[in-house]
Structure formats: C-alpha cells, structure tokens
Image 1: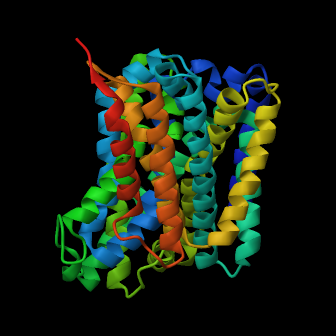
Image 2 (image 1 turned 90 degrees about the vertical axis):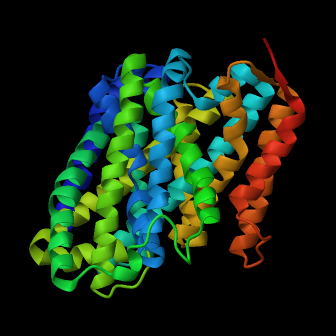
Length: 442
C-alpha cells in the first residue's frame, strides 16, 4: 500500500516539474494555461474538480445517515453545472478574464472586484482544509498512520505540484486522477458493492426518495443554494472554462462534467448503501471502510490511491483560485513569481484551518456557505439581460451576505445556531441588500 502511494505521489510531482517551465512564462500561463485546453482536456479537468471529497466522503456519509434523499447533495451540483453549460459557459469564456473576480469587476467596478476576490480567497482556504481533512480520513481509515502527520504530508504534496506547474500541472494531474477514479471506483468498487448488496440485501429504510422524514424539502432547498449555485458560479469551476481553447470547449466541459458528477454520485450512493448493509456507521470514514471491506487486501491499495487522487482533483484547483484572486485582483502589482509564493501561503493557512476544525462535514458546509451566500446572486444578475444592479448595492450584498453567513456558520459550529441554515440566512441577507439597487432596462 505504501509503495502504491509513493508511486502515485512521484507521478504527480513529475507532472508538476514537467509543467513548471511553461507555467513560468507569464501569469496567464500559470493561471489559465494560455487558454489552450481542448474540449477533452477541459472536460477532464472540470470533471475532476467537481468530483472530490463532497461527491465521495460527504455524500456517502449523508446517504448512510439520511438515505437516498442525501443524493440531492450531488444532484444540486449536477443542476448547477447544467445551468453553467447551457446559459453561462459561452459568456464566461468570451470574457477572456483570468479570474471570476475580474468578470465581476467588469460589471460592478474595482471595489466590488476586491470584495469578490476576498470571498474567493476565504472560501478557497476552507475548501483546501476540507480536502486535506478528507484525505486524512481516507488514509487513517485504511492504515494505522498518525492523523496529524497524514494531514501535514497531504498538504505538502498538494501544494508542491500546484506551485511548480500551475494550471497545466493541475489539469495534467487531473487526467491521471480521473483515469484512476473511473477504473478503480466505477470499474471495481461499484460492481463489488452491487455483489455485496445482492448477498446482504438492500437497506430498505434508506430507499425512500425524493424526501423522507429526516430529509425534507427545506433541506433540499438549502443544498440547492449551498452546492448547486457554486457549481454554476464557482471560482475553481470558472478557472477551467477560462482555460479552455474556445467557447465550444468551455460549454462541452461544463455539460460533460455534469454527466460525470451524476455517474460518480450514483456510484457513491451504491457504495454507501453497501456499507450500511455491512454495518458501518454513518461518518466520513464509511466510504473508505466500505472499500476495504469490499476489496480485500489485494485490491485495497488500488482503491486507496484512487480515493486519494479523488481528493487531490479539487485541492489543487482551489489553491490556484485563491492565488489568482490575490495576485490578479486584490494585489495586481505583485510580480509573477509571487503567484507561486501565494499558493504555498494559502496551503499553510488551509492546513491551519484543517487542524483547528478536524470535521469534514463542518468544514464542507463552512466553505460553501461563505461562497454561496456572498458571491453568487450579484454575479448571476450581471448576466441577466434587461436587468442592472448598482455597484454600491452589489458590494453591500456581497459583503453583507457573506458576513451574515460566516457569523451564522461559526455560531452553528460553536453549538449556538441562529435557526435557519446559515447559507439560507446569508443568501436572504444578500437578496435584501441587493433589491434596492435592481433596475430594469429596455
């Protein structure tokens, strides 16, 4: 098992080293790979980005706890990607921007651009913490290794190859990682789960859909906002579209990623149900524990490496998004080499957050809450025909929505929830602050 992990780590570092020379030519090369990705490469990169800890560990835990209604966590992302591909992808790629904050700044001005960039940085740090925690959960569930050392080692590997090769290294590793995920998780783990369920029987109490007594329509609404909107308007998602060769490649990537996420989500639910039938407790560790039980000693190393690869597919993208938002939007006067230094700095901050929280599901909700409640509604308004939003109210909505959501999320983490889901509170505040600045135009 150790040999398989070392071999995988060496492979992704080699991709980073190979991409490092080209990535150092300019900031555009480092951040969007010179806008050179074909439809296939853009699809592989975006698919890998949207299939990470949330589509595996968090989704499996939710399905084990709530039953099939937990699949709304995945379906929300699929719907967001479909909306992106059908309505936004062409316009995003046509903008020829380097970051989502730059696109927002063109609509609302430089001050709002900086607010958007700050929200991207905050959310990206928390997302990186989530993915290092998810990798720790995988490795410690399948090995006797020390959790803290695993967390630190994971962060170092993620940071290293992203710093070396930028977007080219990210997508280069995405292709390798997606291949591993398809072969191991879909090709091996899902058939083994189906065989196991045929023997144990399906857990009947978990098969109610679309809602249940423990997962109501209000929960569905919250997850559609929490997860669905960031898949339509997301910094890491848009970075792949901005790296695409043309508008057709961007649109293909978004629609193809929606299909990929759907397939992996259904596969994860199948594995989760097999774990429930085998008696595993609902937790982030359920997914790797079920894989080990299904695969045995022979195939377990293959599945372990594939699951680690799944975590990495998103972690590198969020590091790059945070670095891009800082170097291109918050502090545009920085020299090109500073972008790589920022990747390291944000990796360290993400590791600190991961060590402080040590809860995959709580970290997942915190990252998505900040981003969804702060950034998305004003961004979508900027793409609506016949509607304008004043710069002042756009900035107030972003800062107010993100701030309310952050406070509500932190209170919930401390055991003093305000009532409604933090993402709904923040999004409601965003909408209220935005409404006075909305105008229609002919």
